[in-house]
Length: 310
Image 1 (cartoon, rainbow, N blue to C red):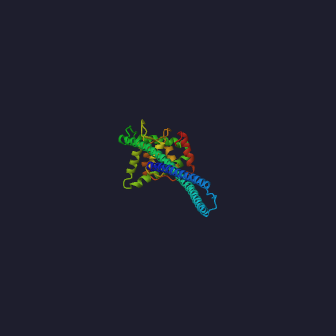
Image 2: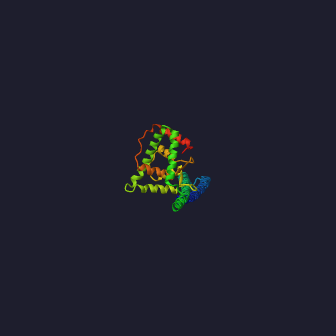
Image 3: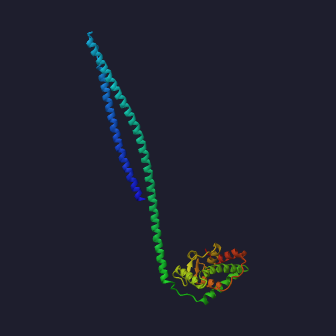
């Protein structure tokens, strides 16, 4: 775009120089025409003032000489009239050519200005896009460096044992059951179906080794884990982004249920271990039959108890 803009500016400069040269030539031609016109007018005036006079004597020879001078004088006047007419025609032709040339030059100059403006705008737009790409590249490099650092370091905190996590899970289930009442079974059934859907997508990737995709997902979640936590936890945004980037197809309401359910400390943070424990457990037993009529009400109750999940 910059190269084309430079070419356009060069073409415009060349055109402007040619316009000035043509204007100088036309001005010189018009000046020459005007000078010739003045000379013709002077010659015509002088020739008319020198018209032959009749001889005073009635001599035949003088009369014939007078006729001869009259004939030459008229011939000279006709020649001057012819030259004046040619000069007028030349002036008219020059005027027409000058007008046409000026019009063509103006049109061409206008087109070049429009092209230059378009190229200048295109250059600015591409420069802006280039700056955006550079900023995006810098941001992507920073994110890659953070991911690489997390990948190299891994989760270095001390994990709770599976028994401790199971005790906490059963305690929360009792609290939910007391809070939801009859809606608990519906809520639990819908949660199991949601987890089963995710687990089946993972298992379908490596049917011969269904645990391998689960370990890969665990590694990605750990790479996004928040620092200074007593167990690996991720924000709800990181959790959703990780599942989507991993290629898992989760409906919006199912994603909302996962985020709300595993937001165990009401801090908009999800426990990685408890989520993976639930996936491994649901993979070992079929989900309960769904009766999701009261699902939304149960989800609202859980979200209210924990201060909101999304």
